[in-house]
Image 1 (cartoon, rainbow, N blue to C red):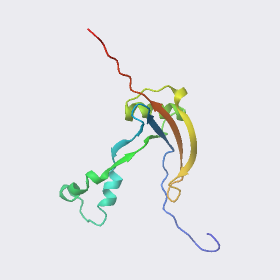
Image 2: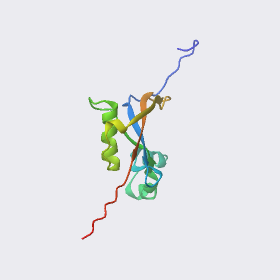
Image 3: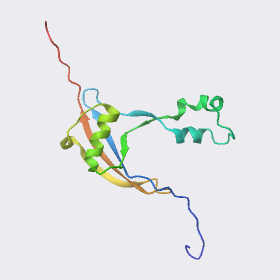
Image 4: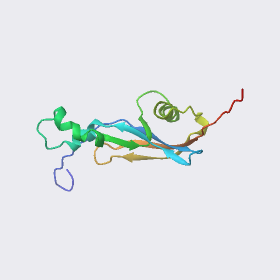
Length: 133
């Protein structure tokens, strides 16, 4: 009840998460991760009673998103440790915890879940080694 009016909400209990801005110093660009997201596909196909392969096919490519490197907090590790694991898993870089800097934490998807997300920043470099015979 709010001001005498009964209200109902849909809510999802979801994991907190980390996201990392990974800057590639050599290329002078941020690294993004391309991932297939089934909920995006289902949203694109909203209105179709049947979701068979023929209906889904035209929407598959649109269900890939470009995102920050990120992951859910679902284990007993520090947030920095989880961020480091995600950088390695999603981007292939092994960075030391000391180079991962916290930027901020905030509540995300507040209309439906209110989970907390913590944003970090780190940078990576490519090293080129030239060997002469």
